[in-house]
Image 1 (cartoon, rainbow, N blue to C red):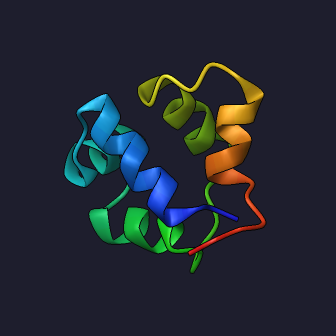
Image 2: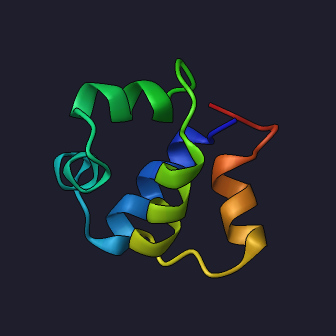
Image 3: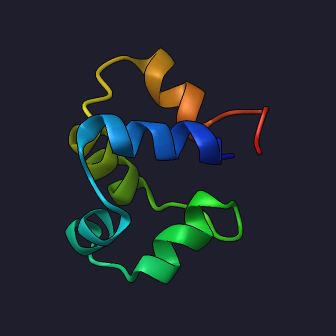
Amino acid sequence: MTNTIEFEVALKRAGLTKTETAKALGISVESLTRKANNLNEFKASELAKLYQMLKLETYDEQKRIFFSSNVD
């Protein structure tokens, strides 16, 4: 599950807004928010794009944000 706080921190570190991120993923801001808050799941293709956009180069970084058992 997505760690919402870590996701938002990663967006800020990358200098991205939710609007920019949603547009790059081809989804609405509402869809992005629902996925970040674990109401819906990210598609594999969206995760691959997010890894690039957020510059998440290691599996540990990716796991900490998108495959966390500790979600907020």
